[in-house]
Length: 94
Image 1: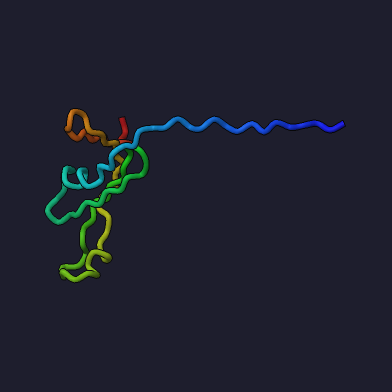
Image 2 (image 1 turned 180 degrees about the vertical axis):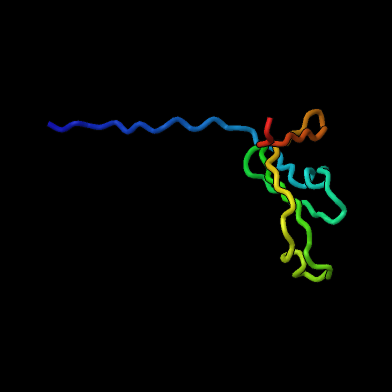
């Protein structure tokens, strides 16, 4: 006697609407000191990691950015609400 096995395929995951990447808008918005450059990367969804870089070299050649250091690093949540950028700092002590 042979048995037939039914293969059950998982249901497709529900489609989640794409969230706009706000990295560049965040870089332009966050507060920085005059000697800092901010680089922001979307981690997933509405979560971002921003680093405040400061150059350790006074020259303006291409290598000077690679010889800098991170002064501050912060995880953020960012969304647009009524065309306004809303940024929330994550991981800050209560």
